[in-house]
Length: 123
Image 1 (cartoon, one colour):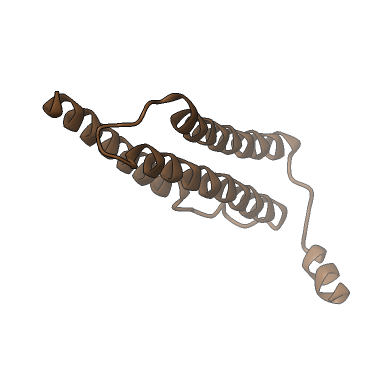
Image 2: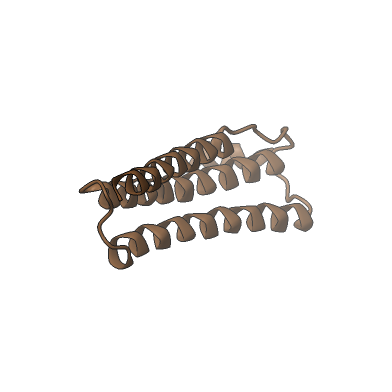
């Protein structure tokens, strides 16, 4: 195992620190986004009264929490892949993470809109 690790580092070079810091800032942005999603999930459960459809509040909160977990993991994966690419002189990988996050947020927004409309119709 040690030989594999050393061999992998043979073609590795230290990237320009500006790119390393930019990659780190991007990673931290993903983590801030995940933290915001998690805070929204907690706030939804703790501060928002029950919605027009029973259990909908918890479903939305679970969706936000799952999205937070995935966002945090995707941020770590993207950071590691970009770091490896920079250290080995390879092109930066394209990753579908932003698409996944956008789809997840769109689904949450559509559900929230549906709940708002349902409440307006019921009253």
